[in-house]
Image (cartoon, rainbow, N blue to C red; front, side, top):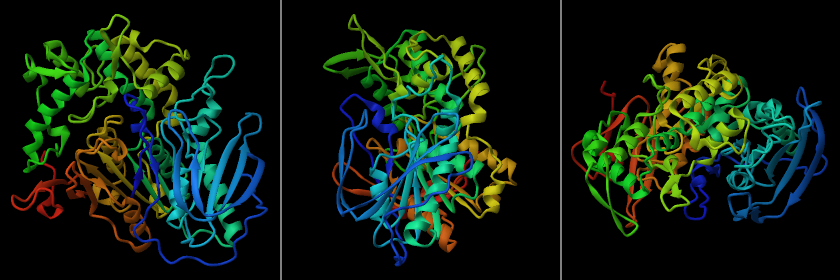
Length: 541
């Protein structure tokens, strides 16, 4: 699957959380021809909703301009085919919401497939890039804004009384994705005169979480779900990813980016050989036991100055890698994978020139707004004890709404659905082990790993960051959506997932990612940059 990752201005890391899938698939099938009507489209309101408006507009082929949506700039998507753009606005009576569903349908070359695209951060859906990418490859495509805000606009979270707007949170968590699916299928049948042959979900991060929610709560909606780096366990990991800031504030130690980079470089050097090949990647970060205290006293060049790594720096890094714990030592969640970027441990110059924390906005907003009910709350004041309390509060109040961690996927299996997930093992924003833990829960609940493989397959990508972003050092999956369509439509269950990356010199490295729980091992001969030099082996306990 081809990705479009939009870059932000230097020093603003939120782009890593904003993923725009383009919907590329290797085999687009035979185009479906038939009547095409882009005029008045009748839509029956999904249960519990009222249709406020329906518009249909034919758009000529050409370039689509995706509007600026803070914090992302406007972008141009060339080569978009002529299409019908249908917009349906839904409301839930008594709620006062206005959830907009967009459905784009290519005028020619439709393959008979429907693709829904998910959101990023606090945005429930797409603003045009992913929709354009999907129809360029023959899909009819849809998304919804769920009647909430944009990537970092969460002014909808609290009502006028300062209480959580649970109805809009339900929209964001689950309800609007299902209603969008119901609407989109109606629109497709009306415009083409026949229903879609196959329906797919495609999303990463928030979009990945939405895909898992579809499998758990609406198992008949999609034939195939591609859910990458999924933000499942939302109520837990969103608090957990504030942990690096809590550690730095409590320890009153704020390592500079170059110091943090030195810890990563040392860890990669120490753990790189564990998979049999020195390729600059940690094959399994969970097996890396590098001790950050080994760097105490090391001098590194930082912004024109020489900095000496201290015992306090090493303590901060050790706690961040270890992950959040209660004051008594009980582990709450996984830490940042060893070798991943330290975006969650961001810092900035303080008023006196010394470093202070710069929290990543998504977890900071979750804690300040949904837990404290004070959007201006200063998260730098959180102690270890208060952190544990907030973690428990988030679980108690929001797991049933947005946890997305129900391991019973039996209805999805009975419906014949296929769920494909890959997750980068250098994901700096969503700890990979959360996805692994969920997969293990499903296996325990549903008869073991081999039975679960019949409909749900997980692949881990060494050296790959959040959603396969620009700082990835390992091969990134190239056509996961094509792999999913082959599984759904031809029964070709994937044993590996093809991945590649170009280095600074332009050389391409390839790898066949292994089906979890197998891991990649170097055969001992051949080019380490060639997928053929590796094999998949059972994980060593």
